Image (tube, rainbow, N blue to C red; front, side, top):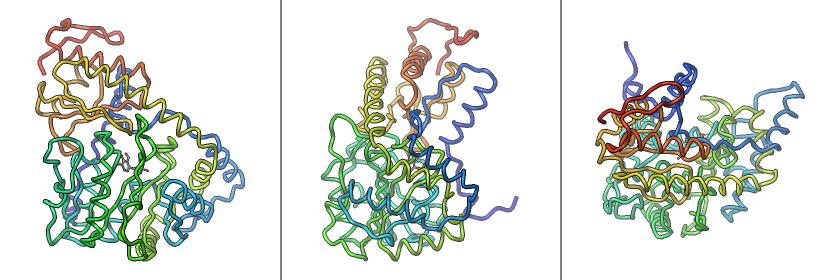
Length: 405
Ligand SMILES: Cc1ncc(COP(=O)(O)O)c(C=O)c1O
């Protein structure tokens, strides 16, 4: 089949593939547990539901302004003032179809074919493919200290004359690591000095644990004017448990926002007016839902750590935030695709192989599900990998026989 050069280079999303696999296995009646998920299980805030229904009831569901309805832009401006201590104008804000689309448009607006975009590894599965969609080259930066906490040197070493942008995601998907203040401050100032675009993907910025202090990239900028190349990405998907609403946004200089808006106009138009109304409801409503989600996730993180630490051979770093941990299972199998397949076949547990995040030998295991799923899921993994465990177990009403990995 004759496909474009770019289409041929793009891989599917391993996380969305697993969601599909889970749905199929579930439909067939398999007792499968999803520890690979990427969305909180809490309910959508009531204010979001009410606002969406109110607008639906008008029966006038029309095109929305491409960069977002004024109420949503105002809510985003207020959010930016509250959480970034920065007053931005409407011209600095664009709402989009999820944070994903906002990042994609930011890249399309600044990156030329052949140019390079750097991001620390492990990284969110979509960054390399988004960069490739621009005809550009993804450049993962592997921390030399072999931890999940990069240092400026890791980025500096990957810079070339083709570097156009850097993407930073902290707390990070898949490791849950919240990068150090020193690193964030260094990278903001480095990009400013080198005149590089810096995309801060802050989609998990309030989901942090152990009383850690949220970092604000604007605190480290030397000169904030309309030539600033700092781009902030955020949205309602994770923190408000509104993944299905598909509302995210970008904050950037007004020239860039105008360019991104022009491109969005021809690609998708503005996001659905219904879900924009829902996002306004969430952003202007009672904010206690976020603290309660954060609290719940911290408890689940603790449970997940306790269980993984009891699993001989697994090396795990305690996540500072998000709802993921990225554990080193390489003593069992260095090929994480094979290991993940094995856990599905032998124990009916879904985990995401590390390859898509840039590190083979690791599995991303989520703690956004129920405590029961976490406990049962990790117990099943333990059974499947521990050579001293019983040779067979009953899951659902079927017998499973333990096998070599
Ligand atoms: C790091 C990161 N950025 C962006 C997104 C996309 O967010 P949205 O659902 O708002 O498009 C995700 C979703 O998994 C993510 O993990």
